[in-house]
Image 1 (tube, rainbow, N blue to C red):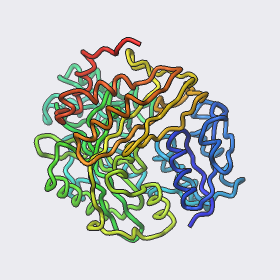
Image 2 (cartoon, helix red, strand yellow):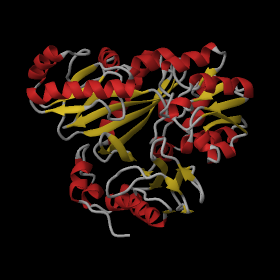
Image 3 (spheres, one colour):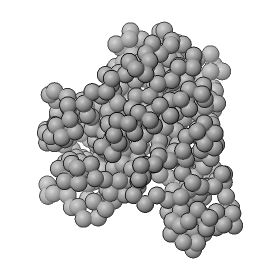
Length: 450
């Protein structure tokens, strides 16, 4: 097992990894920018190293500075968390070349799944259903011809995309040609790669993802599904497990299909295979080769620590569990709490004046906030995750309502009022929602007065 792990991340996910490492008796190294000098992850790690100024490009994305921090502190492995360099194959290769262990899949698998066109072709070969679309990047002429064959509306997507950037819906050929130019600009700005491709646009699908776990000896299991359909601008806001849209037979069938495919791929580590689900059919869209933001809901219904599993597998240990050993218990829901104005949904950096997290049975809060903590303007606006668990979905919703009512973050606006409205909505209570539902909800919702 590793003696010391450097966490190449910040905020709640860095703190999450530190806590598991401490339970495993592993020392930790935190890296931080000058904006995060007083951040909780820098305070609680066994050692911390400043790696640059506030801009992520000069700090949390600075590969050389992170590797230097690992070397001077004597770390023997690097955990990338999520975001930043977590799915950067070049960084994973550099880690290995420096004699360290990258706690994640191989650079080859990161690169394979990071290219959405290659990932789609690979999954098709492995027998996983995919969304109808082009086989690769397209120019305007090929795109127009492909769109007529697929049928409008179509979705323009960046080959190296993620987080909703470089994704545009086109209803006809005029919108297609205009959207191609815009998508290419967004893709170039966001990923340094302007290649785009087309997929059939599903009108009211759900977003269902399967969590997998595999070791280097060819063993792969799935840990059930998560429903991540409550999204705005392709960004997830609320996730739950299991999905209210699936029955036991359906979730078992897709879980076995995915774990078999990923096992055949020779994958190592945790991963999430994401699908659009409409009218009983699954359509693969992408695979994330890292820990997901929403991993806690899977942990709540399985009783597993996914960070511990990541570390053990990366250290060369076999899984030590079979598919039949996995037991799913109860229901879990996660709410992402962002530092944002609930009226405009724009980020709201600032200083936390008062902080009180909810507690009680079945309530978990993943956050690096504290009274006096600064929320800088340089990074993602996610500041906390509230996760609740109970025997049934109905009980879970009641627990979520109670926990949200207890949560106090004073000093800057947050998305808690929106989450409270969602938790009390009748359609959400019935499980009647899809990926476009939240946009429709926001069109008529108005936040309450202070």
